Image 1 (cartoon, rainbow, N blue to C red):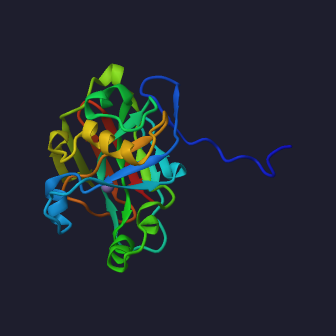
Image 2 (image 1 turned 135 degrees about the horizontal axis):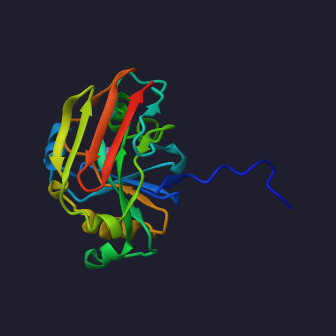
Image 3 (image 1 turned 60 degrees about the vertical axis):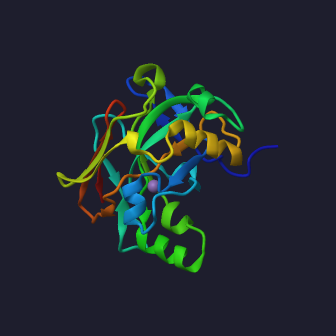
Length: 231
Ligand code: MN
């Protein structure tokens, strides 16, 4: 017995400063997790966290010190950047209490939850799923992962994004409505978290469109930076 065709490659994210690779299982994302972003999307900023997912092979890892290339997706005229702190899970667990959550974190990365905002907006209006707006190919650019052994627990730090050198998003991870530990607590009620899961923790205010040729550069202090051009 064998596969009927070659098995798809295992999605991976490089680990900072090594040749090691973090094998990815699933990508979870948190919606509206900074008050000012929730407000700019028309909400009060006070609600339980909610989750959506992207396929693991939607990742676009960008090696340290390089400029990645993000193909402009089809069927949109409103491609938005959402800079986010990404948590890499290293230990299995369900119903994880916030107090125990740090023990499940393997490391952190900087990610972009790229969004076809026009398609997402239409899906919201019609009560349809978000996949075409959120889960398209290359919709999850990501920096190398920094192991928690090297970063410490990340509970604060500037999170920012520039487009063509102009600052668009500028906040602090300490302003997360649901911090990393609380996010893991909530998420692990719905899904068993396993080593290889990534959690995009939400974006601060300032989301906006990019065009072909635009250069995006973003980062989270103490975690890393991410640079890529829209092609
Ligand atoms: Mn997001």
